[in-house]
Length: 362
Image 1: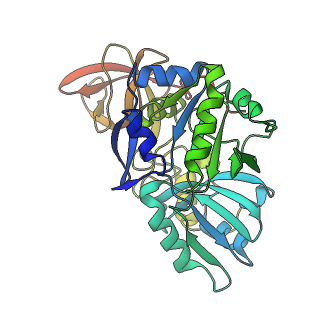
Image 2: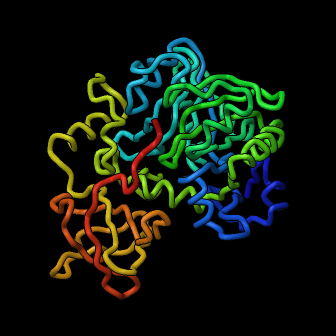
């Protein structure tokens, strides 16, 4: 089990800790827990340690062309100092990982994959890269801290930084004397930033952000709230809505595929799925009763026939009902009522539009 560079900070605050991709990370902090932390992000501002996320670099002549042949999205659509959400698939269209690619230049990219998939991402890219390109695993060289919520812009401004950057843009800034990559990204659906300091500077930057949040009634948040926030937005989580068995097309993530590109890993299979249709796709469910959906629960039609499975489920602190993302028969549409087998009890749910909550990322 690996530890974040902020591990002692969480222990000092008596956080409840758990395994996330082989990293011991905070789920929630003492007090009102996930509900209060979730509300802080929706209403004010919250701070997350997400240093378990991977980091890697891809450098060398031809890096842009190489990565565009590996990733689903089209990196030529962004300029330097912009980031892009994309996916790395296998030849069969299964998702090895979804990640953020930061473009420093056409020969220098910084990647943030998921924690448990970083080794696989680096291995696949390294095995496929031409001799002119170097792929480096930087997992324990940088921390990642997420500042999310409507007052996040005020926190950044109070640190003397101009916060008026476009969504998915990034800049190199200084916080408490430390060099930090500041990016207008996040995983909550709120206006937010992700900060990438060096591993050694993580505690200094964290303390500066905690102090800067205090005038705005900010909260330190665990990954439990991060999960309820992303589920309300319908954001996929690898291993749940995306996997080696669930393609981007099935996960309704076709918007992250550069369909006009000539060729990339898995493109032929994904194009076939797009043209011929899929037998299952991700849909959103909202409970009609007190049932709380959880991953792995079966979804049935009115006749009791199984038509899908819950991939992510939780109690929505914003809506005060159970919500879920589910891999289902695409024949069912928004407004249709289904049942979820909640530990042997049949709970009613309605297929809903995403996101469950309004998005404020821009």
